[in-house]
Length: 433
Image 1 (cartoon, helix red, strand yellow):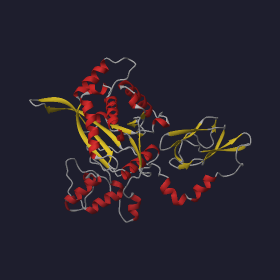
Image 2 (cartoon, rainbow, N blue to C red):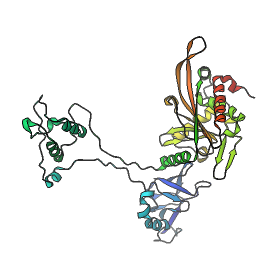
Image 3 (cartoon, one colour):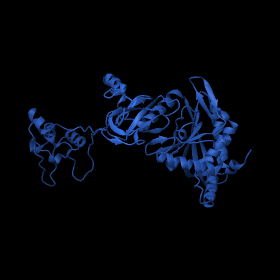
Image 4 (tube, one colour):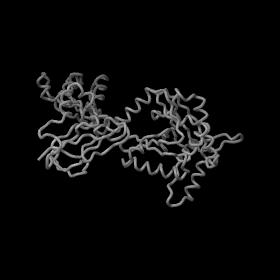
């Protein structure tokens, strides 16, 4: 028998490290060739690591949330034959992790999820301190406990029914000492009968790992390095909604249902053709703006695992239906966790939308290192004056943010106004210049 060490492979061009987000196998398990051992996450995608050999797991190199360098030992198997390492040898990563365990545990390893309820002293502890346990004897029905306002407030904050607290003062008045004795006797948290109001002092620690960690890192970079300017414009989408309804009613069965996003994407393509510098990536370290001819539009999508931004590539080469089909395909893949790495990277400008829940105004965070993001808010039916009367109109706000280092406020306003004009006159979207 021999031993075989599997190292973290190169999981993508330019990727030097990856976060361990899931183990698929336990120590002692037998695995077949090509069986998935673990899942790691880069800043672009989640990648599954298969086993190149058949064998028995005898060592795993890391805990969930650890960030491993490419080439680090990931797992060791006992295999038939010679293997690729000397039997009994310890992978280098283990010694390295052991040496830095005390200094880096708090920084690199998130704490496990656990409940930390805050509870009052137990009766045994109360006895040790000289307190005597008291009995939770309810008063007669209709009898009101006597207590000062301060005692009543303290009992209310602690979720204690004063009718269950024996009073030692005149006429059975409850004092702070009586309340202390009741709490020490494990009487805290006795909620008033018939009410749902009760203090909850539990604390849950949730480790920030996986996709949530990547989102946190990217948002921190975007807000710390990009000076945002947010511009909000009201758009009358009454005509657009009428057109969208007619197109959906007459669409072919093999075509997806149109949302507002394909129209917005086509409007952005036309606006970008007039202001191409909005479709850019800013390398602020090199001081270079990379201006793209192709419109690769990221569409921020909420998934069960968190926020993801699949990319509709070359939107300039797609019509309304082509954009709709690609948005639907990528949205389904993102929700199911099946997006390929290159489908989650390479965007040059992004759309963010909360759908019908989109609020009135938002301040979207730019998808670094892009220079612009277009935010879609919910559609409302509101009265608008046409010069002679008020009419109900379908109104939607566009809340858009721009990198003020390279995009002037005037240019941002012109860009959004152009998109507004196209959405308010949707026939213009279909006219080729």
